[in-house]
Image (cartoon, rainbow, N blue to C red; front, side, top):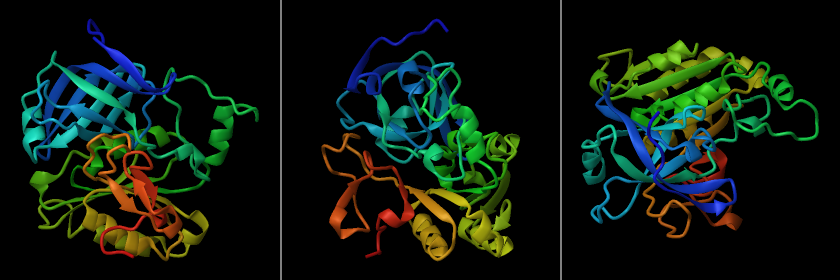
Length: 316
């Protein structure tokens, strides 16, 4: 590639990270929906990253803004050493990121968070990243056992706004073991819709909703979820779909409420302000559903949680 990391300092357990990396920007692209995606050459992070984990990025090599910004992975390519982050311009930090160019370097800390351990969920398996070390459990061929666990279960990916971006590596990791993936995606208008074609190219069924009806079905993504529930009917009890929701807090609350009394197993990805990304500042604490657990940290316990483990705003 011609570029290499200027610095890589391991900050966690040996061989696992997180790593402090000076990453080279290999491309910056303005995309549909008014978002930008940057691809970063950070092989130490790319080789260990899991879907729904995140990185903390120092957007400029200055003290203003002082705090790093958290971004979920919109691409994970271990063989190329590439990670992708996608953002909308909403404040000072992301406005400065609009000035990024190919060849620039940025300080990145990651991978952070637990992500979604898909291979630990009954009936779902994920594809190990290419060139990733094989993990033996002492119970036979690991890849064969994953295939055996993946039979028959559906996956629903529910996204609003830029919440679509981190779901792409998740869907990619589930293919080809999971054949039935439905993507429900919504935004206010067609102008704010991200490109869903990469999901379609993977074989996912994609339903798009806009609140003004300018593209796809008129209404919110939760209305599309209601139609999906109705069409699934009695098959829900046998199939017990896995749902993962990522998007604005009101959407997450609505999705959680809709699926609370169904057989659907729901995971939600939370977005909170994160100063450190390692649990030290406690700025991203959310209330746990269990009083015994008190508060959980989005950065270390999440950002993905089983929906029943956390209380969202207005609950409890």
